[in-house]
Length: 585
Ligand code: AMP
Image (cartoon, rainbow, N blue to C red; front, side):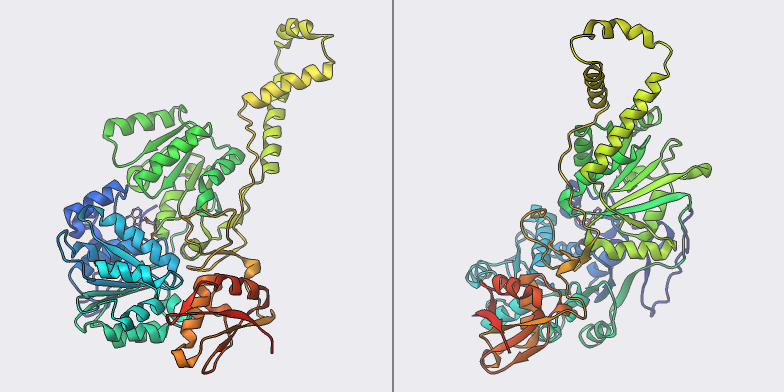
């Protein structure tokens, strides 16, 4: 499919926009690799170690601008690679022997995001020993004070805790050169506007200010206008509708990250593709998934940019002649690839740009054939999926992860079909001697069942007994906690929550009493932030809020009252330990 909408270089004074499709942006053609963006060698090495093959569109546009020191407004959702877009330029400005004083402050809405951004920066800056510290409410402040005292280069903080440390003097701001507001719309929704303004006011005026947000409501524009200096705007623009081939059946399955591999296996077991290509984001993911799928009995081959031409040719030959049935690949490696026999395309990750989705799934459904496009997504990636639907003007059907019963039924179908076919064979009599040996040892029925068992198992009918939790009913609740315990792993950002936990507009409101009020400086944003962070509710679920001198009363969905009380047990608000109990009017 030809890329659309060649971008015109904007006039010098116009806000800069990017298209989501790197191949359609002539200005971006000399920014194909991370090295083209002007990043330091040690960072390039780390990126390649992490298996990143090329920059995503937002990285392509944001990184050179941030390296040049301009202020930036970036419109990008989770999954577009926005973290690296602001993290890499910051790390580029910090050197191995630099004194550990904070030069960058990244403000994020939730502790999960604070930890995630810190981990990413730590990984990218590993070889230059850059010290990154997440600070957020709920964690003992003493530990954070100690770390800040030892010295760090970058601080990633939630707004309330950042203010706490600024007031205590433990977070030194004199050296801050860059402030990033990540997921700014989310922070505003959670009531952090005042805190953000206070943080910006407290940092050096000549700092670089970077604002990332998935949406651009007027309040965000207001922050940009007040606190940024001539900012450039970079946004993933989805301009011209590129429609995907209507012969392609498009389906998305929603699961938590920890279940993606088993979900892929289950889906492929049901779909039984003749040959499929599975797209992953990084080389590392490609290698890992190839091993996993081979372990599940698929003949899978890896294809990525780290392989030389000979290796690639061999892999392609194996796919073409049917020796391999799955090709696990990065976008870069699969560019231009054309295989007639492909029946399925799988997006193991939602692509970071909608146009890549169209390009990826365009590998099937060629020459009038039918094709299947399967996407495995995490609930937090719904926004990326909506962008894709808007661009393609097509709906991607959300399907439920097949259950164990579905799998069994499919396996029975396959065995039945195989036996039916065998029944038509004209050499059945050749096997009479085998039957004759067994006759009389057991009933004919049992002999038939034993033979069927062998066929069934030989056809790879595994005893895959685990149900895979389906997350299609879960709300995309950015940065919030999901259910605890079962079904979660430490990688889940914790922003997935069953729909049932949300308060419907007509739902009952219960109240919690918090023993802290105006006297200790508590403001609505502190309470919304603390409750949202600790309990997993979204800002919109919390309220009304009444703050008196010595206490506050906050409305939360009635069904969540106990949860909120439990989760706030070890929490501090404005540096004071909060005691929370149910409040009955
Ligand atoms: P983010 O949008 O920052 O939440 O990033 C989404 C995911 O994409 C993270 O798992 C990153 O590790 C990954 N990622 C970011 N940039 C790239 C890239 N250029 N190539 C491959 N993966 C990336």
